[in-house]
Length: 351
Image (cartoon, rainbow, N blue to C red; front, side, top):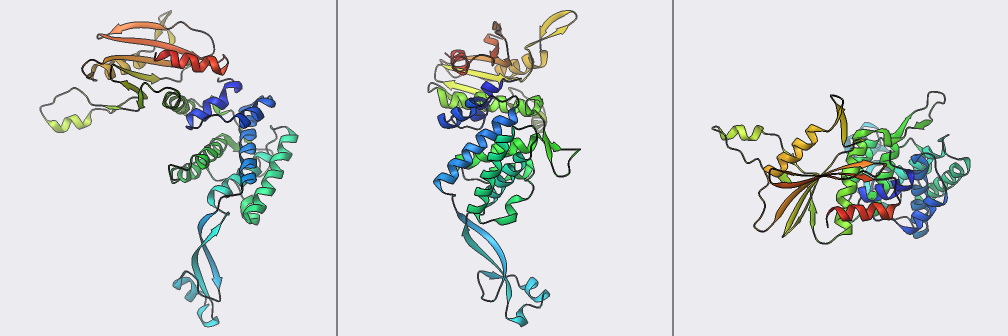
């Protein structure tokens, strides 16, 4: 599993955000035994900064029964309740407020963390105090204290954010990951226990892919970095049959005029597995990368190569081959080393 000392960097790059010195110092000042403590500390510091700067406001749709018309009238609701005869109506209008979907999600997540028995009592008290202050600034009252939204709801809200709302997206990513780790607590009604999300291979595979791709986007300037769809170099008597071929989508492509690297990330415990009493590379991973290379025509003067990248906790020599005329490396990234060494190792892969 990824050591907690590295996890903050890992998540920041996966969520396309550079680590912040203040948050990093706060996270490193308190040793945590589980990732929930790290997430709670990072969320707490981010919320405190938002409170210090003043909660952003936006127009939110409100529904209220009013004696003076405002916005548009919900006619069916007003007639059904007999309000018009009383000189009142159900009105739907927009109001500038800090009581937004994002802020309600943040307040509810703070409340859930404040009830997490696995967190230290002093941290839970700080979370509860931050939640109260946050709710007071929102003017949301009891609405902010409801159960946190499900991870799918948070993900949908994150996708609706404008591209420039990187801070909001980061906060929602934290809340979403906390929601994904939350499980019902069998011994206490309404409370939650939190599993170690590092044990979820599907989630971690997605985060590892995003971490690597966004790291290269931010930390080097030689290559253009993107996920690329590769077209099959194939023909068929019936052209409609070509549409049935599986999509070839790279995890990360790094392209420069003279060099192109197809880098495929695999979140497996090791690059080798035993087969017939002998260690072997994982065949489907190598076949997939080989297919990418064979169906990718290089531009004139551009070399093409492939990299299979695995996470690991011990130094492991890279394996090097030439397959189909293309250089291929199988590399294990040592995540147990300090962050500067991890960053240097990643940059060294593409030099």
